[in-house]
Length: 276
DNA sequence: TTTGTGGCTATGGATACCCT
DNA sequence: AGGGTATCCATAGCCACAAA
Image (cartoon, rainbow, N blue to C red; front, side, top):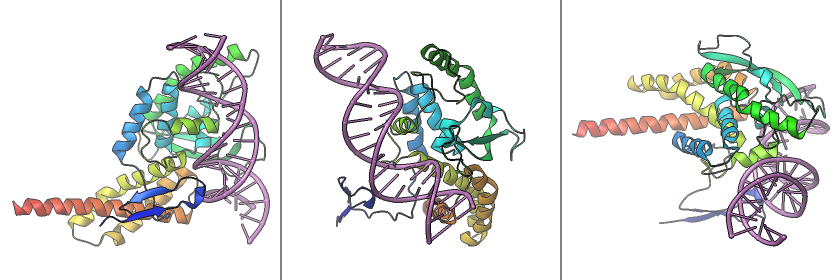
């Protein structure tokens, strides 16, 4: 039987209501995140798009997914932030960067620099090099455009500059760029990008342990939970700046569901293997 | 010249989130 | 708990540029 559920989203009462056929509206407390393949497809589209801004657009979106910075923090990121604070991160191929512009907390109202609570984030050296390449290459070209259009003005310090104006990019504009092409989810937003980083990072950290537990036929939750908490406090929370208990709960639900799915899948495969 | 398109700004309201 | 800030969504309109 096909049940037609017309779910109204309270956030947009006047907008056309979404129709979910044969499904149930997901619990708002549940995260729905895109498959890795959907993200790849979208990023590839952004990179290969025929537009003179495609390069920077794609790099900004990629950087957000790679660093879990907030949209505002991406836009305010400065060239001067690309100097690693100290070499060794958790792995020695990681760099530590200090972000402090556009960050939440400790802001002075109407501060044009939007300087907030500073924090250190971890980034692979490979990713850092990619940003430095941009700073040395296309950004220089954008900077020339800026100086031509604004003679005598102070140079923008932001890392990402618009190839058109040569100046920093507005939040609204970035939002528009994010929603371009085959978005991985209809509700795809920069903030969901942050959640995506957090959950996939958790999943990658927990998967090996979940496998071992599963092989030993032990109870999953009891053993994985402490490791989950550990990864949250040492890796996820510092990188994101702050996450509430509610959000942590949301991540736990998503990760647990993913681990269950992969285990079920594995068991199904084993079962078929034994059938011959 | 008109028309279309992409990039961008300004505005505003609702909501989520963070800090004290 | 309340105030401030950021996010999300929508709309109107400007500008530069290029195709018709």
